[in-house]
Amino acid sequence: MKRADVKVWFACNNMCDFCVQWDKRTKYPPRSIDEIKKILDDEYKNGSRGLVFTGGEPTVHKNLTEAIRYAKKLWYEQIQIQSNWRNFEKLDYVKELIEAWVTEFWPSIHWFKPETHDKLVKAPWAWQQVVKGLINLKNLKQYVLINSVVTKQNYKEIPELAALLVKLWVAQFQFAFVHILWSADKNKATVVPKKSDAIPYIKKWLDIWKNAWVVCMTEAIPFCLMQWYEWAIAEYNFMPETTVVDAEYRTESYADYRWNEWKAKREECKSCSKFKICEWPWKEYPLIYWWDEFQPI
Figure (tube, rainbow, N blue to C red):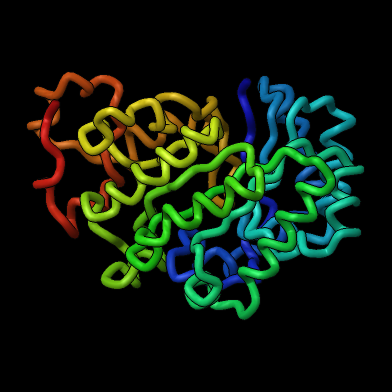
């Protein structure tokens, strides 16, 4: 199902060290409800039947619920919110979003230890708010997908976090390797791990979730580092065709944009058996750690 990723605002109640939208939070005002409705009309006419509200942090937009109700009237089949989850600790707000017709909730939780999470998102009590929000949604029998960004500070906690989320009956989980833009680029010395250091922990997590029969995946980790775990590569196995409506531009195909603008390959990659299906690492990554980890299959 084709979907539209609509960024309603770039403000956020976190200040994450790995944020890729950092400069936009002060540069762009919130989209008006009329502007959002126009975008929803256009993307539905363009063939999208799935919809993702994101940002920034979409739950800080005062008209989010109205936008969701409008999307329902247009007959979008799936309506997802991607959020840092902090506002979902408010049970009445969660019920309001469900009543408006959100069908999927995709929160972000990045660390098993509360102190690690709060330190990196620069928000006290954020971890407790995230978990309370998760419990609220599970008690209300909602479909919950989890995303975690892999950073230098958290990758050793990945298996413990996976075990915790299995106990909380999360339906789907993704570990996305940090994209080295804006804040992540500014803080790359402390934020960006070497992929080969993180991979053993990521594979332990995949084993935990696979054994629990939970859908699990990784993002921005090439095939050569995922041998025997190729089934978990999100770009190849899971990601739907997506149009992204950003602040400055509209990208018709996020997949094409990743292939042609955001990912990097080297000449040696051409000899790899996975060359035609592998998206390679984020293009900024080899500028830090070079290419030695990536060997053609």
